[in-house]
Length: 500
Figure 1 (cartoon, rainbow, N blue to C red):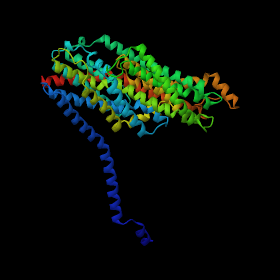
Figure 2: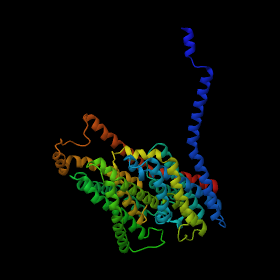
Figure 3: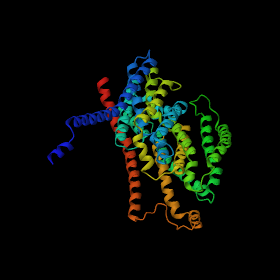
Figure 4: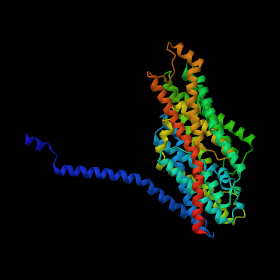
């Protein structure tokens, strides 16, 4: 017996080799987690070098370079926390893989920021505080730096805690707090703040209503029809054309950073014409994909994958156009103030400033974004490609509308509002839709809520869990602005005491 026990034991060499293997695996895991940090530091150094090269001849080159690095840090935090809203619904619906979602979001974020980001960025730079009231351009620069640091730190903490927050709230709060500490509350343009706050209230409601309206349209015209595939072949090209037309109208009406600006009436005609072209291009593609599909909801999910991918790309473009301002707005303010000596500003935001924000957002998304994608996509409401399409399209329309008016809005507000709009509408529609009841009865099935579980306690628990996520996100929204403001004020006072 003793001999057999000895034989069963692993030799010491094997044990030592296993320990080395585990140590190697652990080392690889740790190094992989630090790879993103290393890449981020390299990007910050490159950003400082770029800012230095474009600021030669300016007396405050170092201040501009440091502010550029802070803007890059802020942009990466936006990418890590905020961009997840753009593709979370598509990933949650399993319409695309995480890798494809990240690639699409990164490309269209850059496009949106570079092509259509200047208007909102200018609002953040000069439409929130009155630069003329500040004692000097240097004090204004310290205030903008403090705003960037406070907002970026708060977003960084929220990302580590897996809490999707509003990066727009963070930077607006930071600018207000730093400006108040620098030159008093009278330096804040409260009328502009009031417009922004109203947009924060209206935009998530608008996103939810639009998403619910799209879902109602889909249920009435496609999902609860006898021939689902025929209905889808009719209406899916229309929805894709609507997306394309809205995007074309936005681009035509000044959505290219002022490169050209077509009046709104003509822009709508451009959008209509482009939408018609896309409709006739899309219709044969959808018909080809519909061949051989069974007349059931699972087939509809297949047909909606292409529209969902398109809507996620559109939302990423819209987000880049609006939220890049949260990073580059303060940087543009500092560059403009120090170059002009506080007497005015540059007519347009320099391209290198926009590039820092655009690539910073995409880099943050690629390195740190996947952590939060599943929260928006999976944990608030159950999404399939049809519902995810409604979320992405409604969010894109709301964000593009705000960008057209140069209003900084929270894409997090809008996206999460759209997700909840879809979820709450489903609950109402399941209980009250006569079309759904008639459709189910026509197939000889018992009418019961889609979400009904064999265990009523389990059903209630699921609803409570989803609403708990909503309350967690709302709580993060509520505290973000005051926390960022207080933190920015403290950071400004420290900077001002150290360097002036």
